[in-house]
Image (tube, rainbow, N blue to C red; front, side, top):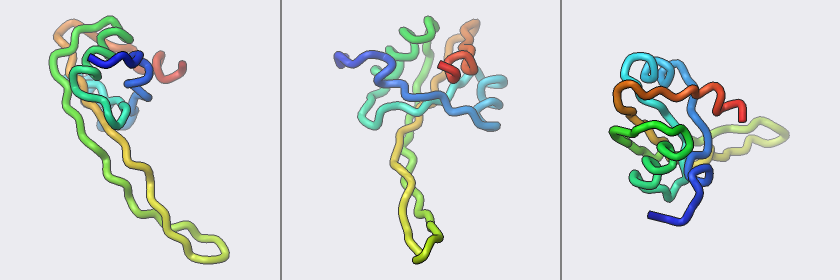
Length: 103
């Protein structure tokens, strides 16, 4: 296990329509995490930050997307590359995600 603090691993919760549906139906929570974080580190960070029991962690790297910026000249750039973690909690455990998002 690394020596990083839990709040260095979990960057922010992802709050979208799809993630809200996952929370309500399947007790799964979505977070943006550090790009080099492993599944055991993510599990440890979520358990420490929210005082819950994690059943499973799924991760994926979101590829950067090409974007256009219109100014004097047509310019192209990309969005950032980031890592997403979908954390499944044990039955009976919940996270108040809106409270965490406001911090």
